[in-house]
Structure formats: C-alpha cells, structure tokens
Length: 340
Ligand code: KG4
Ligand code: ZN
Image (cartoon, rainbow, N blue to C red; front, side):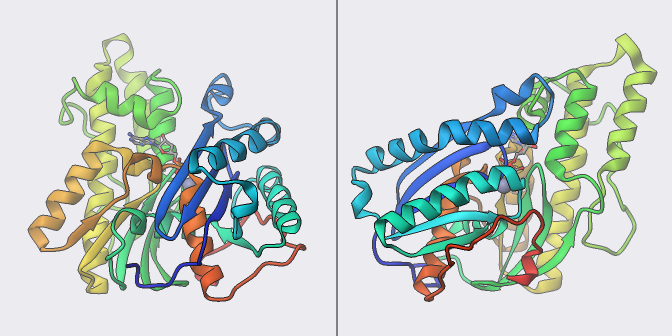
C-alpha cells in the first residue's frame, strides 16, 4: 500500500515532455502496460534533441503508442476511468502534443483529466516497485535535464534541498561522451566504455568540493574533459577517461545524497531519472546506504527513464485527492517542484 490513496479504475497516462512518446495503463499500482517510443535514433544525427523535430515525431507516434498501450493492457478505450498527462515542465511544442491528445480522450470519454508535473512523476516512480516506502524520504533525481535532491514530506509536499548550478548529471555524461567520441546518448556509451577502463587513471574535478552545499556543478568536469582530450590527443586512453568521468559524477552524486539524508534525518533514499540506470552510481548508493542503515530504493530500468507509468501514478494520486484539470490545461516550459 502506498502512503497515499490511488484512483479507482484504469488511468491512461501520456508523456511527451522531451524525446520519448509514452502511454501507459495503470490500474491501482499495477502497470498493465508502459509503451515507450524513443526518438533517440532521430536525434542522434544532431547529437542532441531538436525541439521542432521532437514535436513532429510525437504527433506521428502518439496515437499508435496509445493504441498499443490499451492493447497490451487488454482493455478497450471505453474502460479508461481517468486521463493523466505531463503538462509541465518540458519542451512546450512536445508537451502540447500530449496535452491536446489527453484533452481529446478525456472529453470523448467523459472522464476526469489531470495535468501532471513531470518531476513529480519521477519522484513518485520508486513507489511502483516499492509501495511500502514511507514519507519523509530523500530522492536523488538525476536525468538529462535535472539533477536535484528533493525531500518528500508527503504527496505534493516537496522541498528542494539541492540542485545543479549549471549542467545536469545526464548532460555531463552526454557532453563528455561527445568530447570522447563515444556517441549519443552519452550515459550508456560512457558506462560501456568504462567497463575496461581504470577510473583512477585521470583526475577530474568533482565540482563544489569543500563547499558546505547540497548543490552540484558539472561544468568544470566538461572543461576538464575537453582539456584532457586536447592534451592527450591520440594517446588518450578512452576507456579510462570514460571510467574517470563516470566515477567523478557518481561519487559526487553519492556524497551529496548521503549528506542530504543526514541533514534531513531521513531513513530512506530513492534514486530516479535516466541516470539511475548507471550501474556504478547504483552500487555506490547501495553501499553507502547499507553502511548508514538507510533504505535504498530505485525503480527498475524502464521506470527510471521517461515513461508514462510514472505520470499515470502521479495523476492517479492527484485524481484520488479530488484534483481535476480543466480543458484549458496549458503546457508550461518551466515549473519549480516546490510550487506544487
Ligand atoms: O530521464 P531521462 O530519460 O530523460 C530526461 O532527461 O528527462 O534521462 C536521460 C539521461 C541522458 O542524459 C542519458 O545519457 C542518461 O539519462 N543515462 C545514463 C545512463 N542511461 C541513461 N547516464 C549514465 N549511465 C547510464 N547507464
Ligand atoms: Zn525525465
């Protein structure tokens, strides 16, 4: 049982805030389907996300993805009892595609509509695997767009403890990978290359060392990788450079997470967002938590990266509280988590 009630009946979740088109059917806590169509191949040729191309790709993919989600869940559209859609923050053009479709479904079915904050989806995603997690706890949310330490006191009651002052952790992986000639997206590429490397071979900055802060900074790392590549030229040991980057990022994320738990006096830490797929980060956090007697929870792979199941979960929790969005629901580019 989650420490918050969920909506009665299947909720259709829709996510189009960035470069994944996703639809999910969530019934209580059961993920009956979670279909994700990734645009990674589309954006690879540019080495990053092109907003206009992302919106067009969502338009093409969304209805087939919803169809597949319903089919895999084994329900007809008419059995959907609520529609949850990411409405903020994100690329406005991309969000508009999901929001417009969600309004159409809710209107046609005569069921409630709820706009969901994308980060609330990530923050609550660990409950899909471990529903008995309690509040308060700390979440390390690390993705391509965000690196935040958040204290969850209850549903919708979130305190931002620390955040990045420049690049997000995923962005640091992506930019370093590009400098090392490892391709896009950078996180998985660095993890793979790092397998045969020595993480101690190159010394890289860990950002805001020595400052009493829960904030992060990854721009110095990017510059250091650039210098390293220029200095070493063809002599560069790429696997060791990748391992050193991975270690620098994982270490600083783990260190600040432990400090956040100490400061907030929390007995549980969760890890969410695309970077949660990183094996080195997971094992460092697991190790730290075991030593400190803190419970550690992270959802399995496909629930870490952007997906509609987590959006359906956050939507279901809000619908159960009686919250509803109107048909004037608008996509919003920037929305602080503390305003929820
Ligand atoms: O949450 P997500 O799917 O999308 C958003 O940014 O919202 O996260 C994508 C990010 C990318 O920067 C990608 O490089 C990173 O997550 N990522 C990883 C790994 N898998 C994905 N970073 C490190 N190690 C990984 N195995
Ligand atoms: Zn995300």
